[in-house]
Length: 489
Ligand SMILES: Cc1cc2nc3c(=O)[nH]c(=O)nc-3n(C[C@H](O)[C@H](O)[C@H](O)COP(=O)(O)OP(=O)(O)OC[C@H]3O[C@@H](n4cnc5c(N)ncnc54)[C@H](O)[C@@H]3O)c2cc1C
Ligand SMILES: NC(=O)c1ccc[n+]([C@@H]2O[C@H](COP(=O)([O-])OP(=O)(O)OC[C@H]3O[C@@H](n4cnc5c(N)ncnc54)[C@H](O)[C@@H]3O)[C@@H](O)[C@H]2O)c1
Image (cartoon, rainbow, N blue to C red; front, side, top):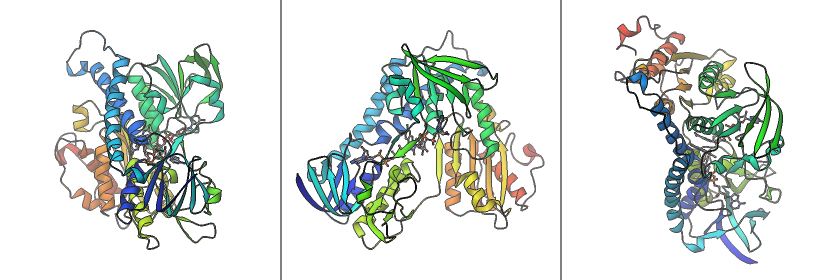
């Protein structure tokens, strides 16, 4: 067993770990970055990037199939070459991974260690069976992995998770998707558009990250116009059968009991932080009821079991708070800096909450979302709500993407903008404008004083904000839409 003594050990070389390494290196040369799996990050290898590449191919197929309403006819059927689609996904994915690998290669060899780390004591890590690392400070940046309920195991070797999809040689004929969350919706819609027969089964009514019932219900019916999603499915049996998996379920609208065969069962039922195999019982930390270290949102510092501040920090998906790429990157940097400065801890800058689902129409949440805001501002009647539909929105109609609804929230009295839930066209861009306004602490009146070009989808945001201003009782409701602004604003 080799012995290493360092100032800072970082466990996990994903987005958060690499950020932590770069930040910690500003303070000391004595840093080791420990990686147990393949380098390249979850985002580039099996997450954000390959999923967006698959969605891009699916959107191309979708657009090619929907040209006729514009007076443009493509003769014959749109042909999908599944092998070519997946080859491009992997080729482009590999480019993104190569970019990360290049940065990892730039790290001095002595600063990198291969193997799985486990705590033996609060300052001691065992890396596989080859090295013991003693570190003054430690950053946990171990990410997360797909998790699924045991009953899905009945699908045997036909059970797959998101990582497996990008390794398929060609597209299967059919897939049963369990979990209409973020990953499930993105992958299901992409596979559907690429010609894969599928059904999506959920539990308890949840759909993506939506918590505003009005937006959720709209999204539910709009998505169901395209493919089958039952957010509250009744599943009676799952059985491995020949080369397929048989799912027996009660069909949503007909109430019929059906048994259907699928090539694969894709489990997209959530992710769990990789903290369960870290030997945290030896780290001296306070753990919450999910076994995750208790930590500070602003400084990423963990708490010892006796409630004193620890020398251990936790960043990225590992802390399970905001499992998104930009948050992992911010948290890694903050944790690395604080590990470097320890014990002089600083508060890191945290951004306005923002998340986007790359479905079509897209889903976006700005701020805490309806449920989060309700718990802060609800009971006292302190929150006003505005709404706009995209169905008659000018630019959305021009482009035939006029599906969706957005709800915006503000604080009564102050008129401060609090957030939004969107299911609509170009929600990724609308959500950025709104998140930036939220972070600037803008009021609805100030947001309405900003320029809005014509004809753009952002005019839909203005409609929602005007509606919100009226419910704040700060402004008049819209009387004659097209007369006050441009046509279809
Ligand atoms: C399909 C999918 C699509 C996604 N799409 C988006 C998106 O569009 N936008 C977005 O913002 N986010 C998206 N995400 C989420 C995003 O990918 C994650 O939030 C982000 O990658 C987390 O980074 P991380 O550094 O915390 O973890 P990771 O990048 O997973 O890094 C953790 C590292 O720790 C290593 N490790 C674990 N345990 C140990 C140990 N004991 N010892 C040593 N090493 C260890 C792992 O091997 C891994 O390399 C997506 C995720 C998935 C799965
Ligand atoms: N576009 C993006 O930014 C993006 C994309 C993918 C993932 N991510 C990140 O990854 C995280 C994890 O995504 P995810 O989709 O794995 O989790 P999720 O929590 O978003 O979705 C899991 C879904 O599975 C459902 N579910 C749970 N048990 C089930 C069961 N037994 N049967 C059927 N459905 C069941 C849940 O109700 C939920 O709808 C996200 O929260 C997000 O932070 C982000």
